[in-house]
Image 1 (cartoon, rainbow, N blue to C red):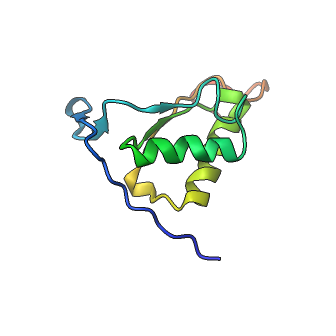
Image 2: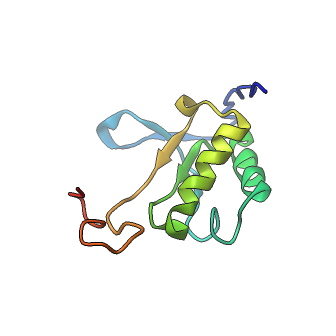
Image 3: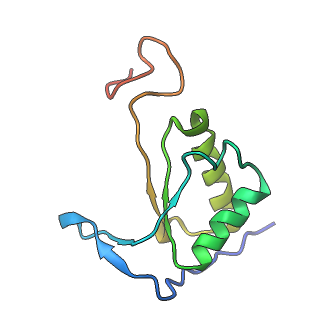
Length: 111
């Protein structure tokens, strides 16, 4: 079954330049810290991301440690399921602490 690509419409969302990078980001973003992949899974994640996207929010914040990595997995699943174009999205993430506790599983110089 082919997934229909959704076109991003910024509506009246104001955008700002992110420092000298030239990247334009919306003044509001969707954060996944305490919800996406943790207390909220499945179709409600799809509803949340779709509502944000349809209202001009194309920036999603996550991290490898949010819900032990499940936040990033749920966000990725929903982006694919909804047919959102990756080029329309700004995904921010953080890393360092890892999702496991082995000798080489944390830090910025993993094996």
